[in-house]
Length: 246
Image (cartoon, rainbow, N blue to C red; front, side, top):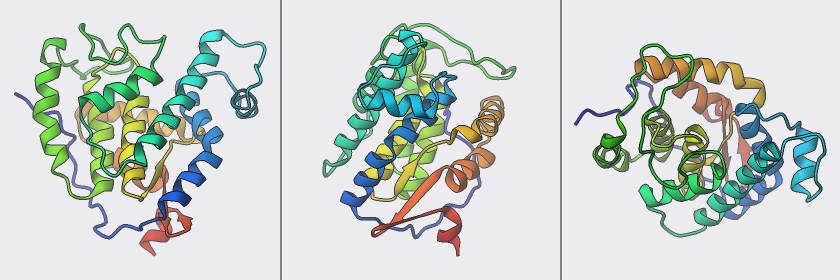
């Protein structure tokens, strides 16, 4: 069976900062409106940041489709779900965990939620990308997840899993959202940090992901995710990648 593990030479730091779990979870809860807005923006959701804040405060916002509102609420519920999971002593990143996340974040959007697709799809904007046949998805998952499970560096594991899930397109819709949420589960569980692609970086992210889909070469998008999109924690402090390096 062909492997679809991203190809990369990027060097991950061996020594990573380690935060206080309770503080990290408090920080994420305080920032949740921004994280939800960013994830929604990447899906072209029309809600503005103030509207997201209003909706998450329990107040409906007029002038939007119900589907757009539900997408924002599903993203929020998904974040709540992984925050709860991350408090467990040990979480196994398996099909059940990933499908449970997808079941929430893609609710009412995908043809099938909480399970692998049973038909083939494409990725808009790609030429060379070849969709994995639906009948091969289970075998691909079982084959590649063994490699990912054996990655010792938790930051490397989170990023590689993120890109692998995105590339394989196990689901009809919600693949990138599911992949980023799953990678955050690893980061939070290991008290490293939190990953969120800012809305202002949307075009750069989409461009890098399209290049990755075409080639499976991941160095550029890994550098982007690690150095521009991840907030790291050291004790009760949070920091950018630049501070880790220095």
